[in-house]
Length: 282
Image (cartoon, rainbow, N blue to C red; front, top):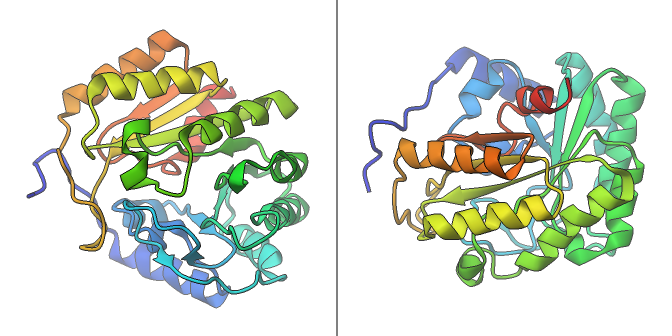
């Protein structure tokens, strides 16, 4: 399907090159690159980036994601420090950490998340930190490890409506993801966030039902964006959702009581994360 007129990305070649050079120098990856995000050039120009820790290979096989599937390497112990030093060099005020699913690790990678947050607190004490985690196979112990390290935002994406999970997220569980968000809020009262994509064959009412489930789980912030097929190996786009539909979803989110909802075609979970956070925590 051809891209409609309302989906247009901006390109900043100089900033893109500079950010890539910095990341390679520190031996780091970003989900911006690994997931082929359409906003990569714009975000790198600010500069901001969502660091992808724990390697670039995932133990799951989600239909929407272009991150490499395979057997990951063991975590690199010094990666936690490298992320902190790169963030300091970039003078970041807001740092997003994410990872592939690491079902091969006993704690799902929670300890590595926690170690990275602690290094950021040590080297960049004034920065806000958002963690965008996998579901840790529902482990509350792993969740507690991450929360106890002191991030400002806990983010976990449900990605799509439950009917489409067998195709979109075959190794995940919708209720498990909701439970993770609810437990994160219960453990510490931390600001919570989640996101989903549209254009995979879901109905409007199904999306609204997911939004209601998220709000019932205590989710504070919501992102909804258009699914764009990152490679020929991924699921096809079933529909390019009209901008007016995103406006309706944003209005629904306001009525439900979300503290902030970013809903538009090019919205992504970690895009403009600092701006989204500022709307909630003023």
